[in-house]
Image (cartoon, rainbow, N blue to C red; front, top):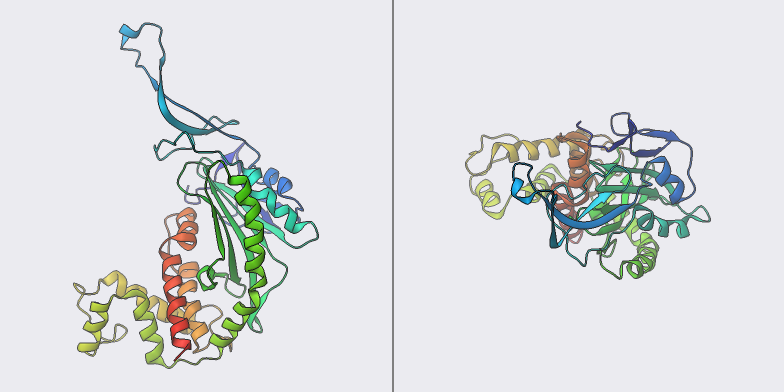
Amino acid sequence: MAHNLNFRNNKASMYSLREIPWHGLGTITQECLTAKEVIEKAQLDYNVKKSNGFVKYLEEDSIFLNRKGKQVPNTYFTYRDDTGDLLCSNGKALTKDYNVIQNREAFEFLDSLSQEGDIIYETAGALNRGELIFVSARLPHSLLASSPDKIDQYLLIFLSHDGSSSVVVKFTPIRVVCNNTLTAALSDGSEVRIRHSSNYKDRLENAKIVLGLCNSGSNSIVEKYHNYSNIKLNELEAINLINSTYLDKSQLHYLADNKLNILQDTVDSDIISTRKQNIVSGVYDYYNNGIGQDTNSAKDTLWGFLNAISGFYQNVKEYSSQERKLLSIDKGEAANKLRLASQLSYKHSLI
């Protein structure tokens, strides 16, 4: 099951506004106004409970007679109360201090932002057995790098029930023309992480304040995008920026010392792996020919370079599952490379 969506009652645990993403799975519906409605549509209306670990004795060990097993002290796991599925599928036990944050608690605070139509819930779903939850909500105001290259603003929430991560609430701009996720292009403070500790409710309340500040800073983001779209790149500058995103200093020196171009020359695969060479070539091809790269704002510009990195991971790179793609773009390889590309773009803009 390459999509890795959770299923309940033969239905995918997925909500989408008007259209169904992810292999045509989910529930088509019109606009839902509250988190409660979204959670019900996405089949996320289950409770998660924490319980002690337990060793089950084998039947062959008759010495224990009718004893079924023994509780393991200071060891805890989580499970769903509707299916009984164990959510700590990685086998990692939780601590006594781990507090369960229910799906509804993680999403409810967004309702206070949407009471007057400020946000629109667009997608929500569960992965695997339901241990990873996500929801995205679109904000009403778009960012324009250069018309018609519109950027929609989203709030994205991740919640894990297996101890693998905190609750993550972040701003995620999406380039509408090609659905590129531009998370790393935002300024610091665009993300809030909430640990599963006893004060998580206070942290959720504080998240509203932090996210409000992030939203108010969107004017500076627009200014940055406009600036990038007006900075032209020649072919050498573009390939140097792409190389700097993927190659380390020794590899860059190797190319410079030998006057080599990955796109044209034979490069020693023992120094720069074939996989890395193919990625550089793929990103450069997207820079020139990718979706939306022919717009005035992106064609041969610094803005086009930044979108080539995000576009490659969003629209070209193949993943073994949609879960891996989601996690890569959120906090994995794609996020790291886009973050570096954003830093390189800023430095280049100062030249």
